[in-house]
Image (cartoon, rainbow, N blue to C red; front, side, top):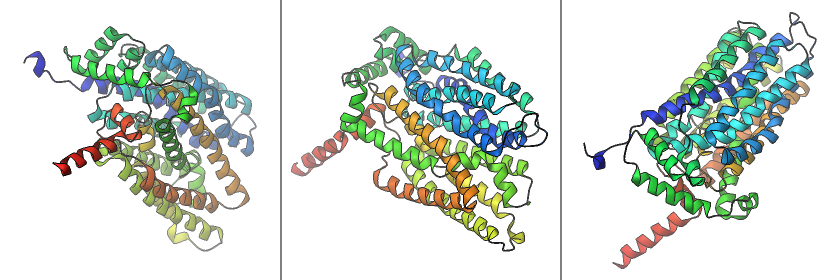
Length: 469
């Protein structure tokens, strides 16, 4: 085979993604921890004395550290690189799990969650950048979906073993994964995009050769160099994120997609899953029910990651939103009827079936598309700052929704938050139908041209030329 006939190999990109996802797997472990830990913390067997209200703040307080961590690591991602930033983010994960292993008071749990969430905030800003920049367009969907898949696998694993081990043992087991990430990821290549941004063309060429397993990467290197130079020629201040129409449009779209993702209730439903099943009936034990639900979510998210580059982000998000809303309304009605003292003994299967259908439909679009599109929507010149702002908004939603659930469930009824989340999700389907763009199969530069409206202008010009001919 001659050099010109050489084809890129995809397995190095998969390898870098799999090893890199050990970091976001740690987010999943943290997300899965409350559903099985909070019932233990509130039990009589726990050596500390923590009230239900104090326990609810364990969920609320963590994402607040996103406010600092997201912009800090977004800044570091442009200074020291995506790779070194990801390695650095493994350290707070280890510290947090050690604190959780020995926590006996609410304050220690709060501190541990703040430290762990600092890592989460940084990862939400850096990881999508790294994966989006090392991936070829034809597999960027499946590789970008690794953020969602790895988080869900982490949730599933924590639910599986955390429900049957002590808080101390489960925390020390969780420590293994960030350490393993540190050992393995140090051998992975840096993002060629970042290296070109720093004008390190030779290093970018070496990185591309490792990622594509090709000797001749001149064609792709020239294209990436031109794309990065054009994007970096744009102003890079935070003001430009709101001043430039294409940046403002991308930020607005990602804000709303992230908003509808979180206000479908995924975080509070996941965090309070065992307590929801306890309230819903005794068809299965809360521990087994939670495990089945997280397994369903993981399987459907992984399955979607395999086809999202074929089916597209937009149609999956719309279909997902419609059916997720329907299931939430059904669950809301069930809890309303049960709370009105009607006999539902013949329908105790509704919560477990409904929650599984909720996780299935949510996973095929709402849960995966916004996470993937974070890596696609922003210009290289402004991407770090944009992702940090998106992470901050994500943190706000992640902090508010569990507390809203807790307040509505406590002061009204458990059906109330389900009605709220169902309505929000239905509105999300309508928003996506009107304003959500499709990014499948496009290079990062082509997406930028679409946001600027230039691809439509080119199509119009071509059509006019054809008519005149």
